Image (cartoon, rainbow, N blue to C red):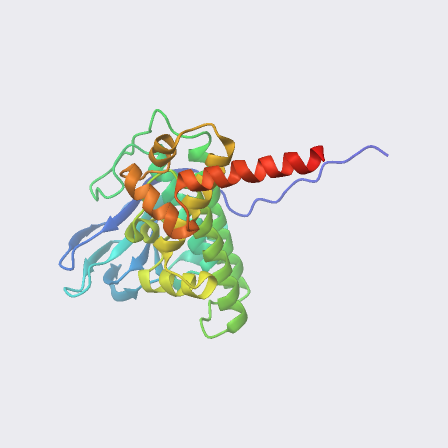
Length: 303
């Protein structure tokens, strides 16, 4: 019997990305409003905002997302107290299942937040137009974008929407009081941030940068690392840097100054101080101890 193909059913397909934004607004920001013939959603990363959707006026808080169907008038304004951070993405999609997003306001899950963070991360790599310009009508490509960044944006956006549709069909809204769900979400978030840190070992990172890149609040991030590592976020990032420095020293392919520069330290003296804080030895003392250990092992083998 000949092999037969298995045609895959496609429930949702994004035909175009129009704009991708990450805004850090002041607490007095007001956008006059607009309507257009494509879909758009707004997700509150931090703070809260007042949103007009058609004739309704609604308040959205952190973690909530609202969808605006094509040709629906919408605007957004801060509440005068809290400076909000917002993710706004507009796109074209003619799939019938998009009907489920009409008039939808919901809270995104941690998995969906991961997809959203990946979209913003890829966009920062492949879109030259600043993501914080509210007047952008045409995005420009980066000439040196990583391979397949644009397709990754499309796939992550489809994953985000499909995840939400499945959850809505199963009537499984995120429930922060459910222990198993919270534990799973914390694990996903922790692994995502660890991967982000490891990808940025050769640069300097601030707490704000880590929060913004991973769409997580400072207090939630600090609590997570206190729970998982019993230390602060930046302290653990410094620990990862020193572990990388130890490996580089063992490889003997760079001197201490080159290692310090490669790991984003402002000076060799600061690097040496941090190295001693975490290991109890200076970089040179560590290198000597490694060589001594290797010599001892060689002597044992010879005997």
